[in-house]
Length: 398
Image 1 (cartoon, one colour):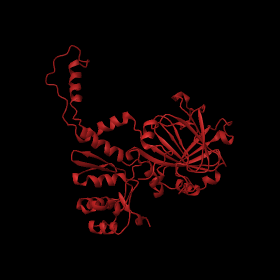
Image 2 (cartoon, rainbow, N blue to C red):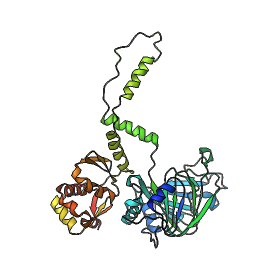
Image 3 (cartoon, helix red, strand yellow):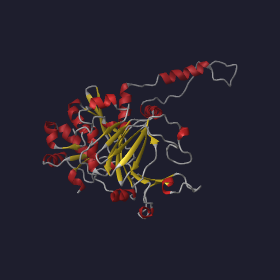
Image 4 (cartoon, rainbow, N blue to C red):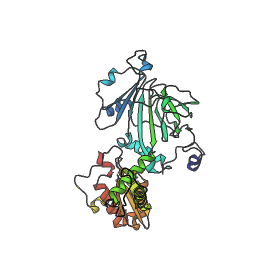
């Protein structure tokens, strides 16, 4: 396991009990001697590629355009972009953002291993933002946890814990930016420094020089969406297709009335919904491992036999997880449920240790798997996931 990026002397247990979803934490030199694996020109190139989610936010008021009645104080554009755009941008007060950047840069996927003191399924994605001097996305509030890692240059972060309502936001723009912001605390982050912010804390980051920030965000599903998703799952998997019937119907004085007896009949139908702990576990595992973008891993064009796969693995090549494929697992009695990319596979209890190894790690070596490879089931499982594209050998990308 990678070392936790926490202040010296602070344990993961202390962070979770004292800070997680409670209060901000500045972590100086969280990643000492950090070197960004992405440069500004590479980020601009990614923003020009179809299929990569990118956004450009321009602060018009910062470049002197707010006085123009036709110019909103902030402007949002969605990629992909034409290369010519970047030669037309002002020298300051704009920010370019790329979502799910860890899917394209293996070194950034490795960086996520440092956050394994939080369950893997909670990690949403890693976003990178590039800003010239004065660049910002405005003072805003998110409803999820985020770690903000400074990857290049310096950035000033200001925060406020004051409650934010819809009326506090600037009207008429497709951005959740506060019209008025008063900072309670302020920090300057340098390369390798990191700021943790719990949900509901307003934050405003401004580049003091050419700046890159990596944002590691965590999933926070809306409870209403969870409920509707679960009901949809039940309807698809478990709910009967019987029709409403009322053989005990009696004559009503008012045909326009929904009678108390009819309402009770409907209540009974709803209360009899066949909901079990097993239903919840199977539904939730599939939901949290489903691809956020909707893109799926591509199967190998030429599937490999188990023997050929194990020979290659045991010769020293490392296996990597495809970042389009989320992995998770949960115990179900004596067996395990493996979830990969929104799909479920029940596995026999003999593979428990292998399933934990598979879901805990992004990088796999034959040495780390050790005696687990003596099991035919485990070797077949790895080979199957490789052939389906959820795992790949490091040299496959060469």
